[in-house]
Image (cartoon, rainbow, N blue to C red; front, side, top):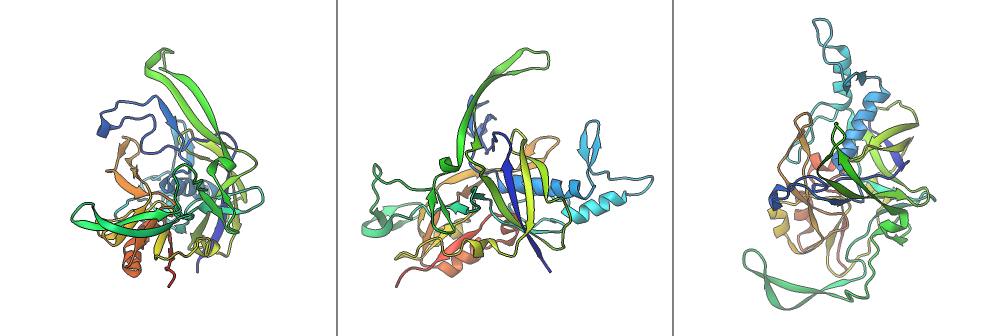
Length: 351
């Protein structure tokens, strides 16, 4: 039996969600550091998973505070600590991987993060082609290997079009700026001796709710969980504070948002989360509308080493295809969907 819960995260202060490139070095561009950085709209799903695991450990008394930090005690007197065994069963021990399944303990899955406004309306990323219809035109384009069909969007005007980035279950349209406002800060990094560090000046753009907005996601567990209905958690590059609220919830993510995207002439898949596509999956699409962004995760937190770079399509991206079933099979990677990646809506074309 599975148990599902709606979890909301209400920011208590400006939050900053880091991406692959914030203030850090970008070796691909031979950059040592960056002066300015803007928070992404959402944290990475891997960060959400880490927060959920830590909260489970805290709520069940398995995370121990020490002088130099906090961790799960792994040894007892001559034996392995029972606390470690219980913690492992609760949340698993594996670090997330884009390429293979990991042990998540009692965590069965978590949905992509979405927005909840003060009226308890839910919003997800809107399809980027909402106001446009794709149309094949005469001629061919050369992309990669060989020539391909050429397409344009009917009704699209770069100057006049005002695409709304988020859509609610009642099909209301809003932008991220309708929920959260930008807060800019500037400063100078100091060393432990109090002196200014090299490349120490920075400008940072964070976000804060306008009127009680919060983030939300649906988490499913293999057993019923017991923890406080409200607790304080940290999330983001600055470890910003959020109030976490949890309540039993009987609906699945896909069911909640089913029907928010309209059918068009061509069959398409609208991405509800960041999505990793193989080259074979791209080959099944005759047109892709969206933006790819780089992602990496920590492999060793103590040493600060990261995985190789992966490029994922962003939420709201649209995949046009004549091979819906084949493409769905390639997208439906269980180990990614378990943490809220590779979620999508399939919309069959109008006949």
